[in-house]
Image 1 (tube, one colour):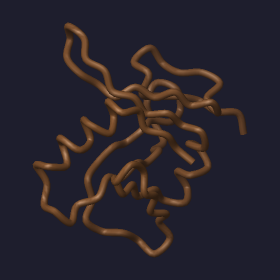
Image 2 (cartoon, one colour):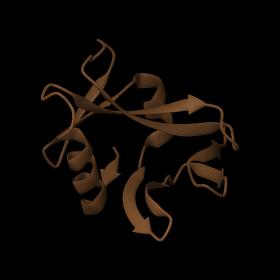
Image 3 (cartoon, rainbow, N blue to C red):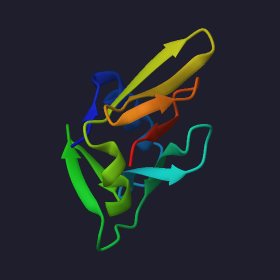
Length: 108
């Protein structure tokens, strides 16, 4: 299961409002980045047969089965500072993260 902070929900909702109404929020983990894996957030209108669709605070989140292995317990937050706004990730499975916080390593 993943968790979204109220500020993340608000920002995803704001971004989603600029998309077609049938668009869903997709969370993926992809190979690469500074520390082996990185989070990919996008909007998608297509749900694959293997995808999990989670209902989180009136927001439908699509997650592919491979990504589920890397995000159990993940907390997504959103914050703004003098440099702008960004999503922040707190993954209890991560054994290390890069300085930007979007890339991580896990033990396998």
